[in-house]
Length: 224
Length: 240
Image 1 (cartoon, helix red, strand yellow):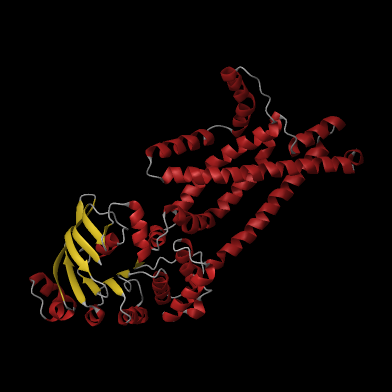
Image 2 (tube, helix red, strand yellow):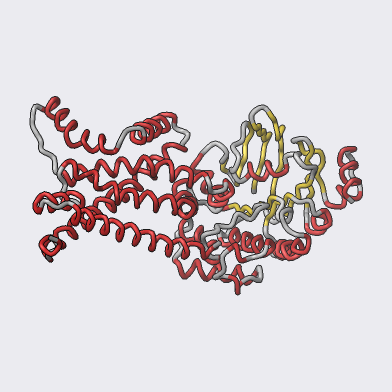
């Protein structure tokens, strides 16, 4: 049985799925970081409206399942679109999955980055301002680099979670790793081997991320 | 050069500065002394716009700066500030600490900024530490780097907020020596300090603050040898 399933083509088929999963995770992480910086800035700003928007964003996204968010964007949103414009759309599952994951990750990143920013002593702001840097320059050159260093371990955890949770996008038909493993399973009436291979691939991805994160952390420690 | 009129500063309901009037002329070295909690630090922080003032005016040259945000950035670029806790940027090397402001605010080229930075690192005697991180330096060395960082912005005045208070006693002198050096070069400075011997030696004017007002000001001789106000007398006799 194993020889039948583990052909070069099938392994390639799964590896491409692993690539898609990783692409989803990386894309979502980048989107999440951008949203997180915006969200965190809004959360600590003195503007009440910005505070409120950021608060609602984080609470709604963190308070509902990611699976539901993916389904909502893929199935619910087209209904809304039809209701408003009268036209039909059939969204691309990969794109929708990526956006849903990015929005989801942004909520967690907002809280992480906010705590990171607030962990930088107030004197660093003052020192930045005292040499004439304006607010956004101080944020960019002084505060964020220190904030990211402080929150690197939880950010890496978030990235690992994203890599695994990209499997949720399989429910809307994106051909990522888990989806492909199940396809193989259905083809050969054997799920054991494809699912086992998929788990190995997830493990290799997450452990590689951990490895590079540890290296990066050690490099950043130089200034301690 | 700097003219302060009727400066008031409150933290919530606590009024820390209750109407300060003072003038800082070019080349002057003003030492601000007074008991803890008298408002000395708040005063220099207000001059640099680190604290928003509640009432009064701060004039730099012919510009009133305290109520305009863009002018405050401009003001800060022209006035150096040296903190009690140094506040060096821990994620940057000493050299990077010094070149950040000149490259980003003054838009200097990298080579120019590095040249200036190295010049001032020599002035404070730390050129061999240019590639170190702040965590690898002693407190006294950190404060000297902080002074060099302020100098790199080519400031018209440097404000010192208790520059030696966070230092171990054996490191106080190396920092004071650097400030003394600046004094002989004619740098305009306002120094909040508890080092009375030093104040007496370098200051061209002493300002004694108590309870948010300037109680007495004058030459070091007038304040230390011949104080007129009773509160000044009490303070001086307690610390000398």
